[in-house]
Length: 54
Image (cartoon, rainbow, N blue to C red; front, top):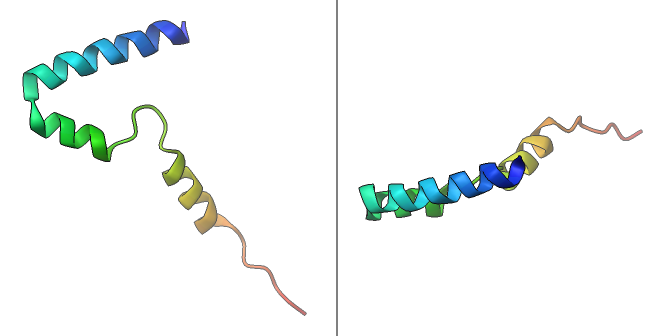
């Protein structure tokens, strides 16, 4: 099922590139395709509790 989703997304991306051209390609360069790993890591870093040193 996951493979079908990936294939569908790739086909849709090609269609969107043809439809919108350069603006969509720019958007793709700036946006994670499925999961924003760097954004999740940054979020986790912000939520780490401060450690107290005694």
